[in-house]
Image 1: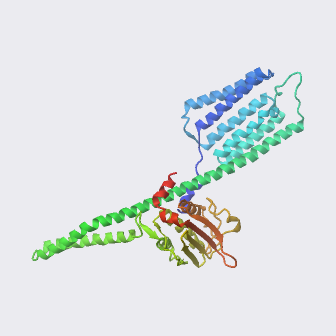
Image 2: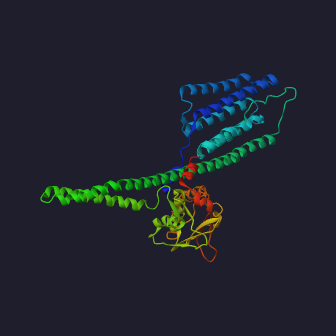
Image 3: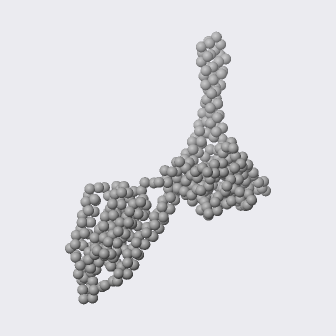
Length: 444
């Protein structure tokens, strides 16, 4: 999968449904009414009940109007979702103004709308909502009605304590929102990269199916075309003196032969394996290496001679694509040579792909294979920006690991330079892995 195609996954549109926002607003209204009832009738504190109920009532009327006017399941544009969350902040500020400002322990609910924004909205809107929440909290330090409390023993909090509450709200908004945004963004990146992996695997499965269909068609059509060719050739011998008929039969024979030649080419193209053909390890490596030759970089393939027979496995698009992608990456960054070494024994099958390029940055070695992680530069074009999005290696690693392989990355030992990718399968898994298993895994 190219980095250009993968860029569609890098910046997904972010939408949140109106139903989600309305559910949160109804929950907030219910909680506010409950708090008002408990303080007024349970604790019997004096505060402007009518004004507080009016604020909650306006919020509930707005919820009802939105629920009637629009389809609750429609996706809101980020700007509209941010506007509703901003309204939540303003409504909370109004209630806190009527009930003691930052002295009210519910002042920490300013975090709620900002955290929701951090998980579903672009960062610029989250920053805007965070600034609005901080501005409201700052205003409430100086402007608010008294905190509902026992009139005979009023609660008086020192200014330094109120400043600490304000500071803790500001820090909580900043730190928790940043954490929520980073965690959500990481999950979103992983989800998008896995979606890209599924698309690649589906494409490879379709290509394999077309390959098998072409081979089957060539096989089925070969016999009738051979019959047509033989009959037309025999008829040519029996129509001497009829030049027109002889010419037509010759044309028929030539076209039949042409069709046979075309089918022969299709058979040759499909001879690399129908969907369930078995492939020795050497054939698998050669098929993966072939498209990357003649790019100015020598690819040296070495197979170790072992005491056991050569491993033979089903032709698996996931393995072919994964190895091919790693090879393409090695060719891109190699200076002159890419080495592909393979060996096996009774328990394992191992392929090692190495290049003589600049290698992998030390700080990236532990993270290599994560989605959207790419800082290597081409040895041929060291100052180019061809770092891509980092999806290629992620997809290759995911596909190979689904077939039971362990994939590890390292650099060559000094004074040599270059990257080394080691792919190791349990031999039993390599020889039994079939494309149908991979396809089933992609559906999970």
